[in-house]
Image (cartoon, rainbow, N blue to C red; front, side):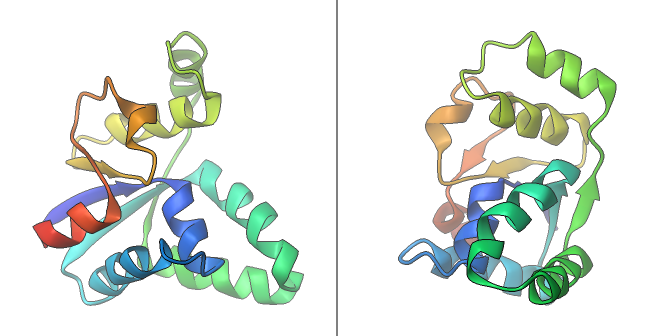
Length: 137
C-alpha cells in the first residue's frame, strides 16, 4: 500500500475541475476510494480549499464536498512544532513549508503529490506529480 500526502493544489484542481489537471487528481481520489492508496491531507488544506472552490458554489454544497473529501482522506494535524519549522525554513512559500513539514511529520507518508514539484526541491521524501503517483499504483 502506498501512502501519499496530497498538496492542496491537487485537490483544488479536482474540486474546481481545473482542466487538464483535474483528471489525474480525480484518479488518485478514485484509487483512495477503492483502497488502493491511502491519501493524507493537512488540516490547513480544508480552509484553503473552501476559500478557493466556494467562489463557484454555495456554502452548503462546499461543506458537503469537504465532508466527502474528509471521508476519503486522512487528515494530519498542523502543530506548533510544524509551524516553528516552517517559519525557520528556506521555503519561499510559507503555505508550502507548512504542507511539507506536516507531510514529513507522519512517517507512513512515502511521497508528496503536487503539481508544483519545484516548491519542494529539497524534500527528504519523493515528490511526485499526480500522473507519476497514478503510474506507481
